[in-house]
Image (cartoon, rainbow over all chains, first blue to last red; front, side, top):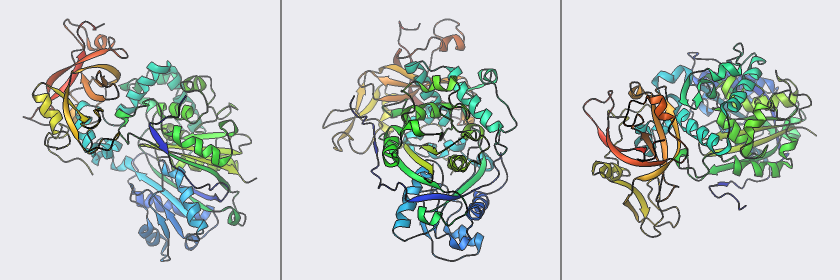
Length: 399
Length: 161
């Protein structure tokens, strides 16, 4: 079989073992809170810095998502009353960048540009939703090709994209609604064990899933994540420096980054039922020197059940088309001993905070402080998949 | 920023990149883009051919025949304009000339010639079903007094079930 050519991997410098996550902070995760992303981001930053045992003045590197203005350098200084120089990058925050920013931080730390890098992501879409065209679809509606060739035909927004991908996956591989339902139910069970999850106190059964209203058949209400307010942050430093700090470090062993060649035009992606994890994951495994078999906890960016199914396959945890069976056999449960997956509940049942809480959950699992704790977790992985980009972040306990 | 174009979500037929697509539909012709140099179909329309780098992109008429690649039965409106349109079927149709070219489209005439209910109509849809283009006015009650002729698709005659 020839190598897939519908996208490409980014050739990243080997940063394995150079940096670690040494502090994590989270805000409340909720429906509309009335707060701004700046307020939420500041709170997450404060908590992450405190968790690392550092002071705001110790933070000399700051990363956020440029696509989500909210908590950048100006807001950092305004909030903490500081004015020192910061190395900054807008290629961080959440989404797939939550998985690649450790690579940028490693470069900055190696080059002496920063010692402690804070990565922050906050979103207040639940509060802002009424002002957005198609909610989180707004950014897509703004692209002229989508605005003219997709939106008028009802092929918009993301729930429609992924309903169409979901159906094609069902047609190609025989994936069933019961299998997608198993993903939703497993993640809800994880959220039920996680007090901070938006759906903490709302159980979901497979019958409840199968009887739920369709948004865009075959995609039902529980295949789709809610819109949330919330944020989180994490602090990175060198592995050497991490030994002086209070928390057990989550060491960055590998980073991968890949792109689909058709950009964010899902309608034209040649490998329609795949994700650019096909290009991202292999580089991360190689850099980390680990195989999918070595992974104790996997978290993936999961706005829809199909996004989980595809990434689990594309990262090499099972054959293409086999993730539905894995889910239906209980293999994604935190206590399955197989592939504990989105153990906090994921975007689907924890909160739609665009991946940042997934990385935080990986760190908690490695520290042994997760709510749905996986026994003996040594290696935890984040798979980011947003737009045409995928990232793979391999974290491990210090050896 | 929210979209403020007053005729949204009708297509902007004045947008240079896609104007020939809608001019074609108004003339009863399905047109897509092709590279004049290497003859490869290039979709979506772009400035330069991704295969050979030439900028000689031309609009050409195609047969209007294709196959049903995938579809969704939309039951909840995600934009106010679609509130009185649900349920409807939005789909990707792969063109016979090059199945890598997929059009986002509306599947229409699901009730065919008799009184089949919509739910029975959608039960006739199947993977890779032959489809053919029809040109129909697209209207939204949220955009009064405006319509745009667009390509929609229905099951090819003789393949209804």
